[in-house]
Amino acid sequence: MQVDYLIVGQGISGTLISYELTLAGRSVMVLDTAEGATMTSKVAGALLNPVAGRNWALNKDQERIYAFALTYYQAMERYLDLSFVRKVPLYYFFGNREEQKMFLSQMQNNVYLQDAGSCAGAASIFRKSEGVGAVLNVGKLDALLLLNSWKNRLTEQGCFRKETFESDLLEVGELGIRYRDINAAKIIFCEGAKARNSAFFNMLPFTVNSGDVLFVSIPDLPADAVYHYGDFRLISRGGNIFWCGSNYRWNDTAPVPDREWAAAAGKALQEWLSVPWQMVDHIVAERPTTAGQFPFVGLHPHLPSVCIFNGFGTRGFSSAPFWARSFADYLCDKTPVISGYDMDRFQRFFC
Image (cartoon, rainbow, N blue to C red; front, side, top):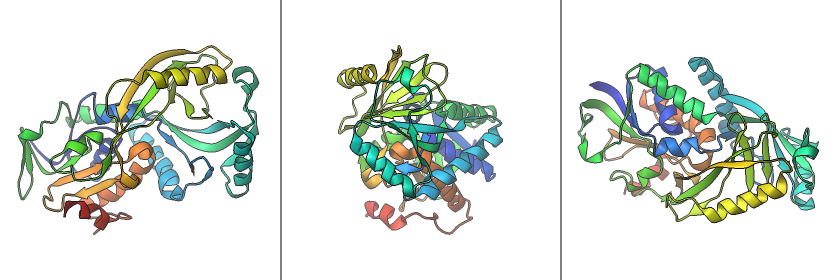
């Protein structure tokens, strides 16, 4: 089989770069299993938030990270003829007066912020807090629907294989690569945290970081908003199920759920919610984070048929659309460089 690109991993990075290359008329073959990159993307919060951090300031890359991504996913919805992104308010329940004062001060310079007083029905759902603020027009993605729908489209076109990539079977030549029965001009690694152990990219500064997520049933909580209190956030996953998370386990990649964190999360929910809830599942996945949150996008400087599109971390659903478009334009010779990308910073790790 001859294709233009062999793509390893169908998390959000593999999904978007294969989507972009398909739009450009290039042929792809995507390899993935239920684990790895896809699992990490499926347990992500998948929000497009125009503000950053706990000081509620406008994201410095707001146009690229939020506005571009929102428009991008809306176009992808039309392409796939489905709906997986909604604009919803994100309600912050302040833990103290200082948080509330900082939020109110930021409202003067940020059109996305609004004093919510108390969100609709909050008095009967949440226990008392020090006020509520809202971030408006947050994009909430149905990550599972997006990833599965694109996988189904690829499968229908004969462009997806559910299998584990075996690096020993990869042959890299001057003019392309061969893997099993597949010949391609280039291979693009979108494996998430697995790239840390790659023979081609293990010199890149990935940081070891995993996170736990709870899935909880809260029948009386409206699904048309996101809720944030302390270190926890609740995001609807359909029906009565809400994503609750998440933590950061630095220097820890053990795939074992952190029971201590889960107990702390349960205690926080019990203190915050005044309606019944029940834990349904507890999942842990390794994040493909990098030093300085700098993504890895480009060709191996010594092996130009080997590429990487990876390292988007906790904000992958927000930042990956811009880089997917830039990288695809470069691969398809529409631009001489990867627009907006610091290639020198990327290539210096290979010296």
